[in-house]
Length: 485
Image (cartoon, rainbow, N blue to C red; front, side, top):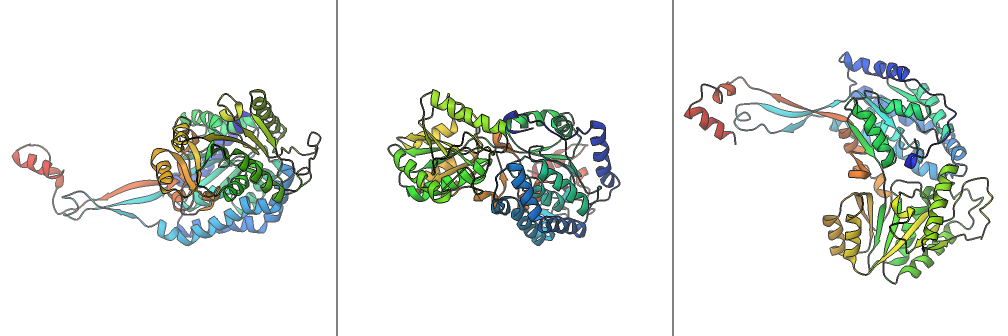
């Protein structure tokens, strides 16, 4: 399964539904026997996962490089391996505190009579993880840290788009973990469909909204609770008084990191009318400073697959045919029509219209539509009349503009004067809303997301409260009932 349903030929043999169910049942067995991982076991699992990444980071970086064609090892360190290590450290430090019961106050008069109420965070059981190709470690082993912290076992379906990374992950997981803790599944599209239909206790899917609908359909057969981390079109709104060069530098960094193949990458920009030329010049300057060349530059990431390359090229052609101005930023004027890797130069699309494919679909590449507005309220109206975004970015220092975006729009995250870094915040939940996702994780919120919040009420024996509000009914029972309000 890929972005937007684009299929890709897979060399992986399909794994049968019967075999998948056998593996799942094996992972469920300990929970069915009432054997739930305690604090010590959870910490041990997290430490082994951290060790797995630390000891094999170089091999992971090489695998990612080979799968993408061009992807710098420092980018993989920044976006794939280091975040898992940092998350493991953060969660290990805080887990004992998170596992304590959450006290709640019983209603009158039960609390007065000595009753106790609390939330007991309990493992769901077996959590399924379906991860994408763009950050294949961070979005598979990353949530696994939180799944383990919550005391669950896991079963992971990795992406067939990055076979070398997926194979290495499967091999190492088998070395560092037992198959009654976590199992990695590699297989083709039919395996993905069968995997989504398993009777997990919880399922995390990261990918496109289009595929999420299919995942939800398959999971509905077993009423599996879902966490959906999707994407959509994340807007960037540049305020009238924003510092333009600083804003453009940050926007272009976010757009070009991993060649824009990020679910929270800036998807289109709203500029004050008349600022278009200034934006273009600053964008050209940023690309020139960051990427003097593109074709054989290891710093500039390839598009993952020919299908995605052709999809992105079609967006540019469609926009041009419908009247948009195309600004291709190619610092060394290289010929990119013949190349070993699928690279697309940074491309600005000026004056896009809603009938263009680039404005209908999540881009997931180094293409950036640029629109303009006369009045700031136009941006709010446009955002609200389109599907709710995973991230909304604002550049400027106007308190009213920030307040309006905070209270008059909805998105998974709101970020001011920066891009992307919200994903790295341990104490902020990461998730979407509506078509950009449901549920959230990271840090404590991830622990909560992968835990069943079991309500517990410990009654008291001083007075039989039930008799105070049950038959035979009288004026006294009516008074007692009203006292409960």
